[in-house]
Length: 398
Image (cartoon, rainbow, N blue to C red):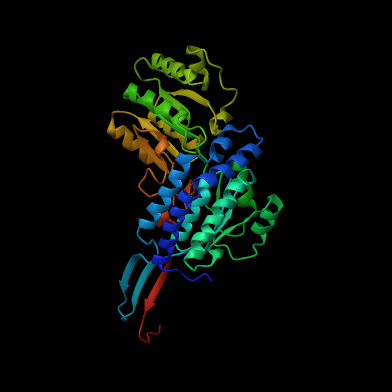
């Protein structure tokens, strides 16, 4: 069953999926409303991710259209070597086979991740959270319709409506071959998958991102970047959680106070290290362990540092390996910071909120990897591939 589908077939399914999402727009919102009504939790970030409104559906449709128009990521030549014995040796990209995605609450992942995996020639197993089950099943119904109308087996996109025990059993003893698992969600979910999976896992989705305001920062830019990073969307892994201010900055106290006042105006709870809580009336952090935490909430920690090296060391110690930004007019200092901070994305004078496949020109992402194998940061269509060696001979023996 899992032979590679021709690219025309894959694109036809994606284009049809875009049309079906438009046709079923009203039904999709009605079904999603039932999920929202059933959601009894008090997790604001989770609820935001669960909602399917017109803007989200527009995004789903756009991602299907973009995927359909992108180059085929499979069969791309990566290396070519002519052996002295006459053999031709070529390395080309190849599909993984079957990819399983485990995620929480976001029905748009059922569209986007499904589309990226399918376009890159893979069978896709979707395991969504119970809070979005009705929305997910409705979207998978559309996937199956798009597949059937193109005479393709519906098994290419499969929804695993499993509870926790069933999921664990599947991870430990899969009832079918799974080549790669991508968990998208909180740390508990990722730890659960890593513990039980028997195949490679790409770790995705933990943020805890830092902004470092260097002594040569443009302070208007710094303030805008901090406010945007923290308040534009609290429920995403590219949101901002920590700020370090260089005490060599002229009037750093005034800048810190102004930043804190603006954050508080936007209902952000601000905590400070010892020197910040001294100069501004904010609670002092109880322990350094909070520097490790990802908040996904209207909450931020602001601290001070007295050197670029100290800032780099602190970020490397505590951050989640996702994104870090330096605000400075000094390009040499920025370059040194960017080369030495160990995160998937490093920025100069811009918000961490851009770490995203769509924003980086990949046309969406399957996940944002904080692992170093085999791809780091947003994993787009062109990264969801493995590779394969093709050797053409005429009787050579060694």
